[in-house]
Image (cartoon, rainbow, N blue to C red):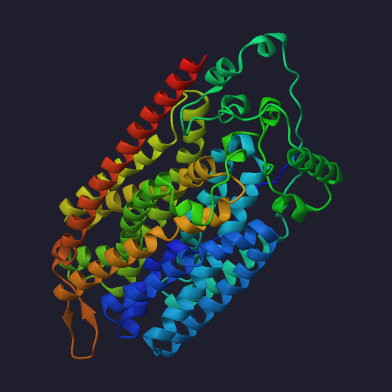
Length: 513
């Protein structure tokens, strides 16, 4: 089947490249600057649930189109405010929120389209739009450094028009291809085996499903299809033959309302566990797996957002302490370098975790959760580096490791959510999961701002600067180091918990046999 990748380019991670100069020109404190950045994060996360429901019901294209216009509407006033050196913090927060909201809408559409078009390689498929999302900061930083060196105003205008143009052009290439399924012909050997033995043979450990036949039906399921399931299959067959309405296939239920044994036994190429599970809405809140994953996302995403939003402040503090004579263009260029490093390693991390998780599942029959454990370890290493590095030239280890870990986290998480709770409600379930960084991101970023402001000196003209080097922010990274250690513990516990649950279920089926 011929397909075309769907990639949305969004300037979400580029905030650190212009935030310090923006704050200096408008006489903002680090806390106020971080508050503006936080509203961009809130725009990305707080409306994820309704946006996800909209994408699940209406398809990806309307969301991407709306996202393109919101990105332009958000960045243009920020540019005007910088040029006039005026603007109230609440108003600036509102427009920053719109930039995050626009990114959220385009992002949700791109990920859902990729997940639907490549159901048997979902980790790899979703990794590409996720990786492009992370690489966007490098793209905009590079273009800004080449064509508008040292000009924050021109850079903000580039974000407004560039984000709109790239996302708007991606709208025309979004398409969901109809799923072509086939009915497996049962062999005599499989028909002669008792149902319990068939279930035991087909059982797989949670998070390791790669074969359509590797997921068992629930015990006690009737082998006879109900009229409801017959009607659902007939509707799917009819819609697949039509194949002309992309929206129809994009919003089509991906599993019947009644999943019966004969449907599972005659699995299609894309009928993995994510097509047989449908947990969403309020049911999600009563699911232990959701809260475990929610905790990991909150800890790691909040830690990553703190560095992403403040790597420019880190660089300024170290350089001003190391060489007080550095000028503004020098600081701007090094801020953009660290943003580019964050972006590139973010891109690499998303690709490696997405593709690597498919390799873990298909070749090693291991859980995708191991990718989260690796991300936790890299995050912890990045925090240790931030606590130790005092030479500004070595700050690249903090930005590089943070980008790699953040990319690794988001590169695999959509696949884990789809496998755990089902592909039908992926967008809205992802919206629930995106609420996790709202609280943690706010706490870590505001904590960083308070600590940085405590060490800053306010000049007579209202400008602020911190020349204490690593002391400007060390306490903040001590807190996130503890959080990452807790996240690693929770991740390893989940892997152990899933393993024990899998072995108990397997033993129970063997006893029934």
